[in-house]
Length: 522
Image (cartoon, rainbow, N blue to C red; front, side, top):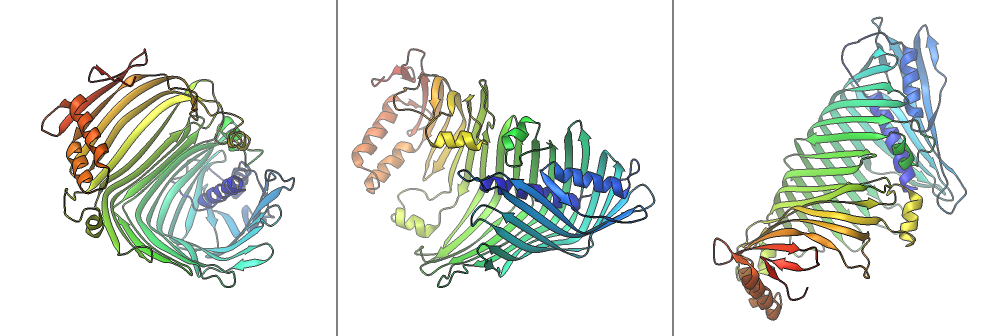
């Protein structure tokens, strides 16, 4: 049920984001009925059925509660369908007499989510949505409405979980608080699609989690708290009407697309975990970061970064407290999501920049200070292309892949845009660009890669590091001697005694050349 609940949760979150939206001056007239019709239609694009009976006072509308229900297909191997039901406390739509509408909610609104799954997978989440200084004005025209919102404070607080058969968890804390909120959300029709554009700023967003295991005799407890400040977010997307909210691949084929990003100026967090046998706690800080995601027929892409990171860990599994800093931390992924006979791009990146290893840890690895204890950097960025003959968003395709009944496709090309390994007085930097002919994914032992291309490698201080590691007994002396000798024999000397470069070529006839020299193991 993971995929389906995630889809339903995203729709619920989007609905709440709409109810907290904002915009600029009116461009035409809208009525409370126009706003209600668009809000209801927006929810229905996600597969929700909206149940309520608006009370009218003139042109104004008010609702004591809203119930939104989404049908979920059965779990694999089950013929029992599921549902997600979201119940939200009152809302009023009041015309302001100038062609705009005020969307109003009580200062405290109950919010309940009930997930009706097969067998024992039911779940009820009871929470409240509290606001201070909330204002939202809708303006525009019936097919293009902008919602402008502000709030001094918005807080979502979960009071209780209840699962079948009646197991209730009341967390000590489970809340999300947003302060200094303002922004705009624009919803408009684009043929059969709904276009969503949103901008929002937050002075701060904080979270607080404190949950204990309710089972008798169990002592597990997790606490997690943190704050992000100076946030900005943008989102631009198109939403088709969906028949099956769990079938994201079908929605993408019908035009679903999203491009969203978050930036923050600073962040901090702390956590504590304990059970009968162990305990761990830690803190982290950063001087800013970002998270971007896009999803469409062109593929799925994630990119997350953090700068100026400070970490501290201690616990029963550590012989001493661990503290460290990083200049930067990053992760990126790009992958196709639809099946195609044509080549599609993919890529990945990972960066740990200037990681400071704690001296107590260095003293365990290098007690005699045999090599420099400078910060460590490991960065790699690669991309490629291939024919992907299945959809990674299709449950049936992924089930067949797991059973070994089909392959992913074939690899056409792979490029290392940058590779940097730096630390302990040594540096390795490389780039590469290779093309492949019908190389299966995943690789098979009976298929030898048929590839052509080049790679450029620069190594500084590597032979010296190998010799020191061998002297310390960290690697076998014979292997260190063989590797260092090979670097010195086939590497091209550059600026110093321990500075070599290598140009590696894979030729069309299947030979490997290093600096123009054929390798004997071809």
